[in-house]
Amino acid sequence: MEKIRVCVVGYGNVGKEAIECIRQAPDMELAGVVRRRPENPGLDCPVVASVDELGKVDVAVLTAPSRQIPEIAPQYLKKGINTVDSFDIHGDPLMALRSDLGKCAKEHGSVAVISAGWDPGTDSVIRMLFQAMAPRGITYTNFGPGMSMGHTVAVKAIPGVKNALSMTLPAGFGTHKRDVYVELEEGADFDKVAEAIKKDPYFVKDETRVTKVSNVMEVEAMGHGVLLQRFGAAGTAENQVLELKMRLTNPSATAQVMVAAARASTRMAPGCYTLPEVPPVALVAGDIDEILKHSV
Image 1 (cartoon, rainbow, N blue to C red):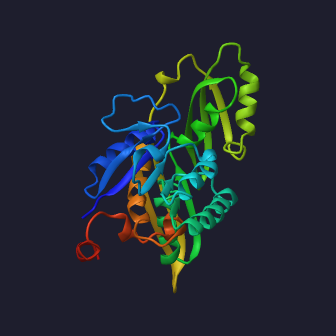
Image 2: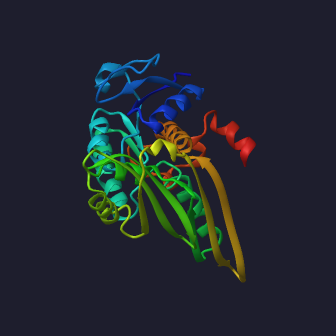
């Protein structure tokens, strides 16, 4: 069977993990890495500035920050290359991205799988299953304690910030606090930086504490977790309590889901999909009949 040729766009924490996940996938081949500055950090694969230098590529795993995805993804979709991203801005921005990339993908015969991390992503699938099992009720998503990559990247983009870490602290029943540690550029005004962080859309809805540190590496940790809870009813039963609890390493979990979605993209019709729209069996390597025989 011909292997799926996958490239990784970006070489941050998630990009590095995605490379390893692709190498371990029995049905995939790492085509190379695309970076703005194509210096090779010691990888035994091509590192290039443009995907055009890699020959045939079936899927591009986009590990760029969420706010760059609306600009980057169409560049690949227009070339007929499927894309996978972990866009993590919930609500209207996510739905707008789904609409825009859907039009682009259908026009060029390609597939985009968006928000394919663990939240949004696999947690989204679980929330939907919980709702199917208990149609009447409330679902609470409790993150952490742990590092939020999306929030951390947002802080690093604020002028005056040299390095940053954003921790998510669960306050219970779907509410959260943000604990942000910043290492400042020389001459930066801490009060102005802290104000800009609290006004950023990633933080504006949550209680946020900002702390200045001399070296973020001394407090950095990649662990994270989630507790999903649905309190609901089904039929005549009013006491349906459904829970899923996970502890994970953030970049590894995100990368693995993205690589699974890359596989699924090759089994789907042109268009744009969120992870709940992807058949679970399409995410797993191997013959579909064999997968079903051992899983159903």
